[in-house]
Length: 492
Ligand code: GDG
Image 1 (cartoon, helix red, strand yellow):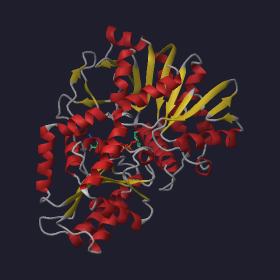
Image 2 (cartoon, protein in one colour; image 1 turned 60 degrees about the horizontal axis):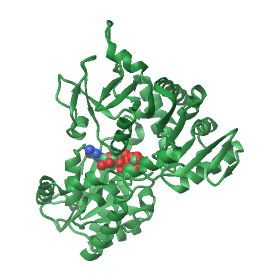
Image 3 (cartoon, protein in one colour; image 1 turned 180 degrees about the vertical axis):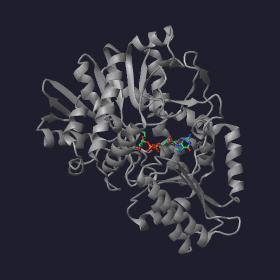
Image 4 (cartoon, protein in one colour; image 1 turned 90 degrees about the vertical axis):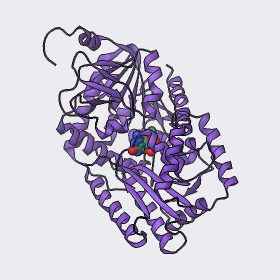
């Protein structure tokens, strides 16, 4: 920003909100006016662009369930979203987009490397996912995590009106609740963890574990995806800090901290509408034609992450081809692996392993013009994703551990035609709700293979019964209800 009078911006900085969301990332992407939109922005869909008079920078709202769910609440309550705007340059001044105030927090390249890629994504992320990759711990990452969490807490303290409700999101910001409470004891503070919360034995590995636990205990309500995670949490509070709990409520000095399960969901109506759109239906047909009109299309859609079980899924497919129980070109697989956390070493080695497996399968079982696996290391628009869901006979969601897994829910919601079968890992949070999926243990290769075959050969009436039952569940458990339940429990 240059000097001079900036009445709009200054007004924004001092305006306080009765409802504040704090998340690592703000729900917007910057669009550079001088260039064409970035692939991320293209993947984000067609949200309106709003030039900013004060800074000349342009932003668009990024899509996603969380934003969709919280947007109406933020608009109704004149809320503010505190988060990182992306990029390491000078952050924009606070601004307003589509009725929501956005309050950017600065991250520089060292913060990104230590707080985000290091402590958040190379220490906490693998540890909380059953240590399926070995967590890496570094003291300087932890220090940076503390510093950045303090920055987010200070920003939230600045924008929250007296007695406001502040809702902190996810594993990057676990110290924020306590830091915020210290500065602003008048606030109602909620925290939601989108990823699993590990059992005591695993959590005890974490250097600085008491600081993290105390950080979370600064909240009035801590939401988890699963009941088991909430139980892990209250037991940990007793084990590590000697705190007493009754049911899911922990006594912390003179306060009570509630833990509870609030399984997140998707905007079901939006996915249903998208999938019903004739252009999407036509695109689904075209995708099948481009794949050579196979009898069976098997689909995977994931961020390229080692928790998602992409390798084990490919291996199951390869073995079924090798055993002659599936054959190309009758059956083909499409695997979308959206680029993710590419500077973290675990992710670089995963990419190499996945691509080697795809190469091996196509080398052994593909034909000229007919690969066995169509591997797409790219981001797609919501529309293209919906078309892929509609084109797939079998959707494979096989994480080794996953807080929820929204892809599983999106696939079910997209199949209003009641076609399609969902193979789902028992270790995805979604398995607790989507009981009519073809559930499997992803650690057991034979079980994955058998389950995939059952899904491939399911009689259409049975497939329809299963999908319909899951759709009924989703319609009454969508993301809007998730947000309302959490905020009601928080008492705000
Ligand atoms: C974390 C937890 C929990 C994927 N590729 C593209 C794309 N996606 C969208 C999917 C889905 C979302 O990204 C992924 O959500 P998941 O739930 O599957 O997984 P995580 O990213 O790991 O999310 C998870 C979630 O938080 C919410 O609490 O469920 O357990 O790990 O919506 O559709 N979207 C677009 N292009 C792509 O290429 N536009």
